[in-house]
Image 1 (cartoon, helix red, strand yellow):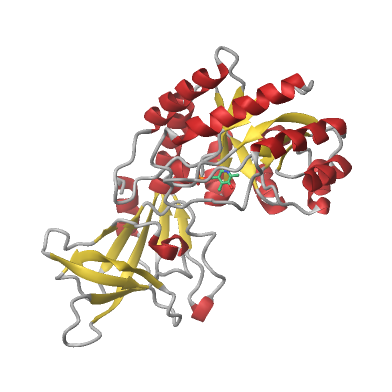
Image 2: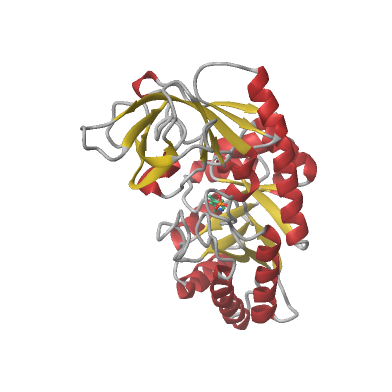
Length: 376
Ligand SMILES: *Cc1c(COP(=O)(O)O)cnc(C)c1O
């Protein structure tokens, strides 16, 4: 919670949940990444928060952009990024979207199988491709599991095929899982990557780049290591596996770039109990899974919730959203402690909500509008 956000909320009273993002924090985060990994280009993962003000700030600071769709490519271009600073990083793309991206000047594409390589060879001849390798996301609070990437031996084949089809087999990528609290998780993926580099070099294909992905955490309830620690640990792993022939590297932070820059102000709509014996209070907010807090799915992301009564005694609560869907419960398996003095109508601040909130909110389930957002 920054003073600028506090002042904004005090000056602008209005009903309904709203996100306020402080650009000063985004700038600090960008400079933090650039300083922690000085020889690494930053590709901001646009999906985390595509607000035009955020993209324009980052474009001005020299950031590149990782995009997943034509719309995100257009958003990055509109913010001032040139096409050489944009990657089409989704491994699942329609061929006509690849062609359109190519026409817009995009030359860097992600793949994880030969069928996607063939699409790119047809629709974006001569472009650079990097192959995503599977990474189990162990330890991450929002793991990305098996949907993206292929096994290491297949990655070598995919890139060999790209080379044969006239594309530039540029490198490898992986993602250690979002909200990854352990900087050592990059080590194993880099070891596997180095083996693929050697294997392909023997077959006459020289890779140049490693995309280290995202995964850099935002601080929620638990402390997380500083970005400096990630930078040092990753650099040591690069040295260990590549010696003094470290390839070009890029990172794709999303959550780590904007998560801690945003605060949602919400309101307590109802506090009740389900029976006279009920030990937990049910606290219903005007925000839930369908209008901004989708990442509470399976109670994976636990946001800090601040109230004006935080010095009072705490008691266990089930926290739920306002919609008429029973999955719209934020925290129940692990009850959330809130002040016993919390009242209906009280405002609460949900911290660490700059990433993966606005874009995840539905167009209007139950008539609750998408999350309002202010970037200051
Ligand atoms: C979502 C995504 C990211 C950003 O991940 P964070 O954990 O938010 O940093 C980076 N790269 C790719 C390919 C992604 O899909």
